[in-house]
Length: 57
Image (cartoon, rainbow, N blue to C red; front, side, top):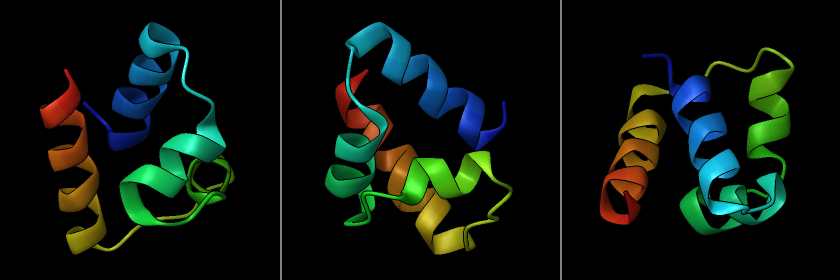
């Protein structure tokens, strides 16, 4: 599953705002918005986000 799909699913289930997710996961409140606009994060950033999601799901 693509990273953005995983994040969107988490946002829908948890009711977390995209900006809060980005701030908590990677310290960037625009992270999710940037992904929605086509940003491709580095592998290390992807790993951080997946670890963040794994700890909360």
